[in-house]
Length: 190
Picture 1 (cartoon, rainbow, N blue to C red):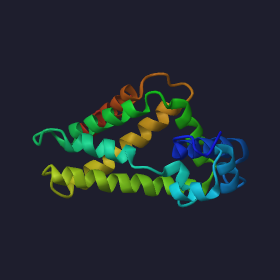
Picture 2: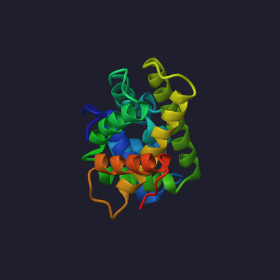
Picture 3: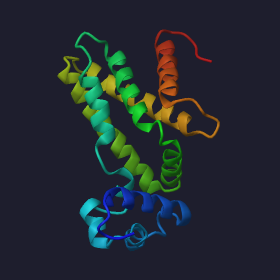
Picture 4: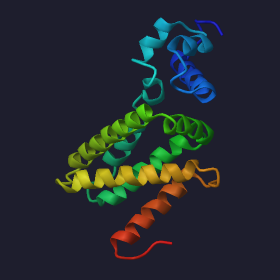
């Protein structure tokens, strides 16, 4: 692959995931990632600060979730606004299940990456809380709703990437959200 070819960022991300899956995160160097992508280390560092960020870079997930939540009518209950956001995010993942499974396996195998994932989710929760505040949801309801939304996303995502799951992500997310609603209403889940 020549260096002039487009989508350097995507090629680097794909090369990194392949190498991390094959060799492990710790055993893979930035030089190897760049070489596999047909690029230079310098190009790598133009796109990513370090070899962790290739798995976490970008704001697409945050922008989509926050944008969807911010766009619902103001009289929508926070939990229902979160459902809209989860639906929007689910569409983004529709054709990326295998990629998500590989990425999660790499993260699960490395404590440093697990920590980075938690930091990213915390940042996502803060952005979501800001979006809810912007819609007029007061504190602490905004922060509590945002944290709840991230918990639903985490549980739903883990179910969706499991080998036994074949349903669309949106259906899995809705099931998790319905289970949460049943719990908060004093009911039991299956």
